[in-house]
Structure formats: structure tokens, C-alpha cells
Image (tube, rainbow, N blue to C red; front, top):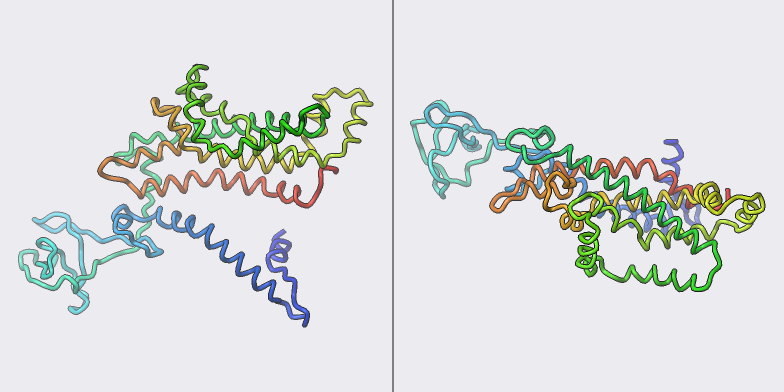
Length: 358
């Protein structure tokens, strides 16, 4: 399998003089490299920054490794940040007063002997330290992070994503089956109307959607997030276009064998549409898992109903924001989606390489 992947990634078209790399190959690799950087650079930065301390993030430390300013307990003084003086053979000192152009410092061995030095000659003493507590504190609810209910938020996110995706696949596939395999008056009109709803921004219907959820009595519950997003025009259009490739002769043969319409849909159309369903499943999982605005509106009143995305707002206060916890939990939320995509991507490949007939 690894050999096939390597062969695919290193495949080239070649040039007329039979050299391995042609102009098109070079342009293609430059384009792919540019896309790779654009997509993965923010993710890589988030991952690396999630292991940095809060102090480093507040200083906008752009270095790759997680450096931390070293501190020590000075007798009769307290905890102090340490600095090095390169011009004095890397002598270790701490600041004995406010930071100025000429700063007062003292050594750890003789904290009472204070001398002055230019601020620019002081270099912070730093060590590489991976801040694992950025992950452990919110998950285990320690060190002042008792308000972040990680496992509750995680369960709510999983429940909404799984149930909403299952309902989305069933409802959208039913609509696509009817619009692709049944001949009735107005079929094209209904299809165009469904596709036309993609032109309507979701924020425009938020107020109307709020009143609908409120009137049905599901405001403040997880079902208030699941039900409104059950049917999507993107899913209906995607599945309809794929189901059009399934030969009608298969369905007619099943009807001649006395198969019901439900049996045709469930035992023939659905299995043949597995690649398209996998694509829609990935899109639906990403939509539901990363959804923030609508769950915030519906679930804002009850913290026990919050999802992980809403839970991240716990770390953002009026005067202080814990960016280290936000980045760590953001990385945590990326893991389930990445696992699902890695599992379902083989079906996407199958959908590209084959038609609906197997």
C-alpha cells in the first residue's frame, strides 16, 4: 500500500525529450506545494503553539519550539525571572527593580548587592519546555479549570454530529432518490428550487429558525440543533447527481421481481451510492462538529448542553484570555474529524474511480 501511495505522489508526465520532469510537472508540484503550505501551515502553527506556555503566547513568540522563561525562588525576595548577561560570561541575574533603560539587577548568590546594567544587554534565560498542562488542566478540570466540562461537551458534540449526520444521510438520500429516479411533473422545478436555496445566507433565516425551534419546544435542547439542519440542499444535489448514474434497468429488474420501492431504495440504490454518501457524511460531520453560531443561540442558557466549540468560550474572559488552553482544546477537536476523514477517504477514491454500476 505504501509503495502505491509513493508511486502516486511521485508520478510525473515527463517531457518530449524523455526527461522525468516536464514543465507541467514542475508547475503542478509548485501549485501543490503552495496549496499544502496554505492548508497545513495554520494547522501546524496551532499544533506547535498548543504546547507553549501562556506567557510565550502573550509575547507572540513565533519560534517553533516551546521556550519558557526560567524562574527561581530567591531567598527573602520571592519568585523572579532569570536573565543572562552575555558580556559577563553569561552571568545569571534577576531584576531588582522596574524595567528601565538602565535596569537594576542582582545575582542569585548575593541578592542584596544590586548593580545597574543596560536593558539591551539582558537576555532572558530560557529552556525548552512542553506545556502538557495545556491539555491536562481542562480535561482533568484542575488548576482553576473546573468550569470546563470536557467530557460533557465532548459527548454533546459526538451526539449532535452522529445523529444529525445519520438523519441528514437518510432524508437527503430519500429526496435525491425521488428526484433522480421518479418521473413526475415539476421534478426539475423542485430540483432548481432546492439548489436555489444555496444562494440564501444562513444568517438571514436565523430569526425565523429561532421562532420555529421555540414553537416546537426544542429550544435549549440538543434536538434544537439537530433537527433544523437535517436536510441540506448540498446533500440533495450531490446525491441526486450521483444517483442519476445508476442504470434504471437495475430498478426495473427489481420491480419485476416484486421488490417494493423501499426495498429498491435500501438494498440497491443506497449500497451503490456509498461513495457519494461517504462524501456527504464527511461534509456533514465537518459542518456539525465545527458549527458554532446556531448551537450558541440554542444552547446558551444551559452549560450542560454546550458543545466543545461553545465550551472554548470558557477560556475567553472580559479582561484575560487563556490562549494556551484555547489552542490545546482546538487541537483536541481536530482529532475526531481527522480520524473520520482518514477512514472514509478510501470511499471517496472509489467514487471518483467508478460509476454507480458495480
